Image (tube, rainbow, N blue to C red; front, side, top):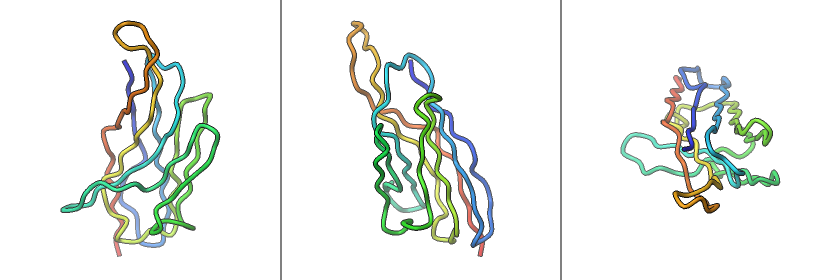
Length: 124
């Protein structure tokens, strides 16, 4: 009923920039929090950045000052602008959204949805 499509991953040199985008579609009444997580090999998934419906943001300490998360509520998109990339930023990045949609009984309910993940590789 709700689908997330991620784009923008790829290979970039250290110090470079990359922008990730995530678009939600389907039977959406509204979207609350939207965020980005990442998972490096052998590591657990960690929060990178999150933005509330009202625009408040939180970032992992490791990306503060380098990454910027933004959203377009009219388009149901959330972007992650990554600058001054470092090799340690290499990971699979996942979009996560809290969506209010109608459940099987037609009642508004909040669900978490995850994107398919997109690989970001930063070379030294």
